[in-house]
Length: 568
Image (cartoon, rainbow, N blue to C red):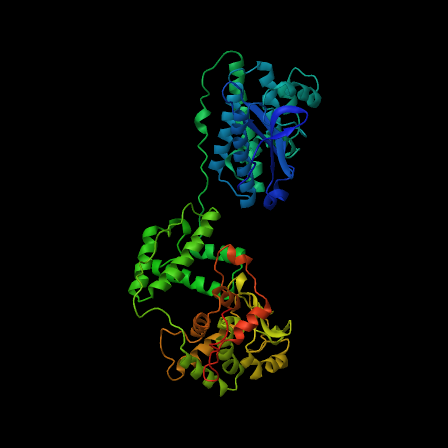
């Protein structure tokens, strides 16, 4: 998780540079109140120094230097440590294996060696340290402060408070019952556990936490035996020092392609049609691989072989690129962002497509539109009667029109309009720019469309209001759109594969707008197209401007273009 701090903070009561950064809101509740302790690195002539903070809305503390360059280095060290902690909190707790727990305990052993080997202190100090740590491991004391990071002076005071003045500390502790649970263990080793977990950027489940505390305390006890010898001048290596394995992070296991898809679906909450399309992509790939492969085992060679197989089956190149490969790349990007894999193996895999003459999609001609509207005028089913005329005279996508409800037709500034918005029963639009208000062409009003819409009122105009549907069920307007396309394709002279049954009307609207010399930006606003430029977001058109533009469109078979009108 990325944390930002643009410059050093300051305090009026201190000349040292300060660290201050806001905790990410996404994990604030999980890390609030957590004590953070780490060592600021030595830089140049300035020695290492401790950094302590308790996480709240901000993490803040002294960087223990007046030198800005040293502060820069230490600031980055603190940021890296906090980023690991916040990332671990976001990922959630994990269960560690026994080997991994021993690996973390080994890191604590190395920390204690680094802290105390040069100046180990006295034998008496380590005798007390050993006694208290063993008592905590065995549950013989109700509580104890954490293992000090820089010294052991508190242990003798604590031992006297807990056990009284005694010359036989070991015997006194052995005589106590083992009945205090894990309280002392938590207090004795808890801070070191937070240090080692933060250092590695992980959080552990409760059952792992107790085991980790116990092994950290045992590692500290092991070092205490060695430190006691060093205190009397015996620096021979600890023969058991090498018992700790290196800590190795668990690799994600069992997360399959379909598992990634399910996680993506739960987080992104895409439309049912997108879910259906992407599920088909996953099914196609798993069928090719003959298994629902673990995401970490998918290779670039697998993706290329799948792409080649799709081509062999005759899948259109554009479909391979824009549906199959695009869907897989998006899912793998999601997996990378969530730490399931380290790279997107589909990156760069793309089918070479060369546009060929005779394949580009075409708009309807005026004669096509005249024939389509003539067929529609003789129909009684609402979808066949009104949707072709709406598609021609609004330039809207057929899916936007098929999901419209009667109350979306209303007067705005004295102009009858169709408000294109997501349907109340779960309909969706292509993007944010698709939501808009489109003035109705006079021919639609004259044909009685407004009256039809008013009769429908607060219910769908082209499908029956559905019963409660499952979250992944396709919206019923999808079936309306599909049936309309099938009906148009079956009409005489509407079998040209380069003219999409309904979408060619949208192309006609765009093309005719150019012939009428209406500004592209105005036509785009009516059709819900965005140009993607910053300037486009500053351009707005009134209902009156759009109504004038729409009224200029001819209705082939009924009227001719108004060639004498001034350009808009």
